[in-house]
Image 1 (cartoon, rainbow, N blue to C red):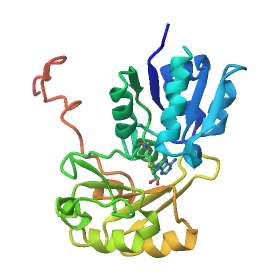
Image 2: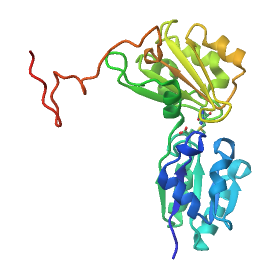
Image 3: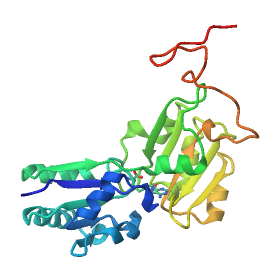
Length: 259
Ligand SMILES: C[S@@+](CC[C@H](N)C(=O)[O-])C[C@H]1O[C@@H](n2cnc3c(N)ncnc32)[C@H](O)[C@@H]1O
């Protein structure tokens, strides 16, 4: 019986940050194609003894597709392992389109994206009442262009929590574009290889983060996070959500009467 191919999110690097389902699928897989640069090899140690594994880093789309199809047609359980969550900068759409064109079934298992691993490592909430209730996930244009209407300069005008993937190598431009929407003292955090043994968290402001990132030598595999929610001035302020506010009723709890 043929099994659907599974696109699986590996999480950010810590081998324990894969879903239970993803880990089971990896254990059961007969053929695994993994995105080499940011998928921890330790995740692959737990595979079946006869599982075939391929690093996609040096392969083309046609080559990875051929591997997936071959495994599927041989009746193997096939896993395509992607870093973080496959739906973000994972290039899965083009792979799914090829599978669609051949009528090959597939499923997607989500993963912990770098944004959530970084928020956890920084012990920060991305959405804080009256500061920001919106998170924008984006990137700077590189060899992959970004639509003009999504330029960082215009996204910055919202003043929301801004998370920028794939762009730390252009940190000067990131900060220059962001400066149109955020004041120089706005907190900025840069998270390098979160969940890996060499994880590095650099915190500063719009005014000084470029120097700090350059000093730390971070040039890739990091995300840049900008916004007031990343502030740490002294004890955290006690801004509270409505959810646990005792004067606020919702479907699971009546407000306490005022005394
Ligand atoms: C091709 S994208 C893949 C993103 C991935 N699908 C995700 O959900 O995290 C690679 C970029 O994600 C970010 N990234 C992925 N893993 C990371 C990690 N462990 N620490 C920091 N940034 C990471 C970096 O911006 C990196 O350049």
